[in-house]
Every structure is written in structure tokens, then in C-alpha cells.
Length: 186
Image (cartoon, rainbow, N blue to C red; front, side):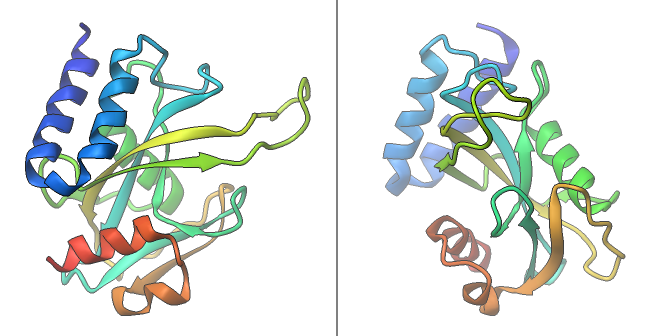
């Protein structure tokens, strides 16, 4: 077993010990890892692992969200992992690319959250940019950043915003984001 799979299994084991109530999603991740399918990149058209960050300010009162250009909704920063890329490195790279923030710090070791969600099909088969409906197995890390530093909006976003955790419902009704809000307060 390669070192990335070994690290992922270790992350999942640690997460399972801390969040017993999330055994089902951990089991689905473990099943995917054991399947022999391609985990990283976009070559596996049915599903692949992504890496995200729940970026909070030092006081943990605000979270950084992006209004995703392709999805048309407010989400945490993150995206695809490149083949051979470490999971944490991918999450931090995506957060930097999508926000311009250079001083991103892991606020805790290990995974902060796990989520599996569907991504709608885009484009037309055979055309550039086409992708079928597929699942993202999202590894989420808790990251801290200074909310006074100017942000840089990338081409992947319509906007970026530091959102008070108490106001998250005005931006998103996604249960996974509200679960992360609850974990932030814990």
C-alpha cells in the first residue's frame, strides 16, 4: 500500500475515534480507499477525493467562504487533489489559490470533517470541460487565517467573504457546513 493511502487510512482511523456518530461516512471512505479505484485527480469520472479547508479567524467567530463560480453557491475553500499530492498539502494549496492568503495555519492535526456529496454534470460529452455527475469524497481540515489580510478572488470564484458563524444560515443551508460550524464552536 502506498504512503498516501496509508496516511489516509490513519487520518480516517483517527477521525473515527473522535466522531463515533460519523461511522457511516468513515466506512464509505474506507470502502473507496480499498476499492482499488483511482483516488486523486479527475481521471476517475465516478468519484474522487477532494481536500477542503474550513478557514476560521483567530477568534473562531468567522469563516471564509467562496461563492463558487461553477456551483453557484457559497462553500468552503477546496478542490481536487493532484496525483501523488499529500492530502493536507492539497487542502492548503487550494485555500491559497482560491483566496490569495499565504499565511494559512492548520488549527488542529488530523481531519476536521468528512463529507461525500454529488457534483452536477457540466458541459456536453466529448466537449472540452465536460464532466459527468460524480461524487466528491471531501477531506476537510480546520485552518486559521488572519481575517484582516486582503483577499484575492480567483477565477474559480464570484466572491469571497468572511462570514460570522452566527450568520452562516444567510449564506448556506448545506448541512455539512452547519455541521462544521457546530464543530467550530465545540
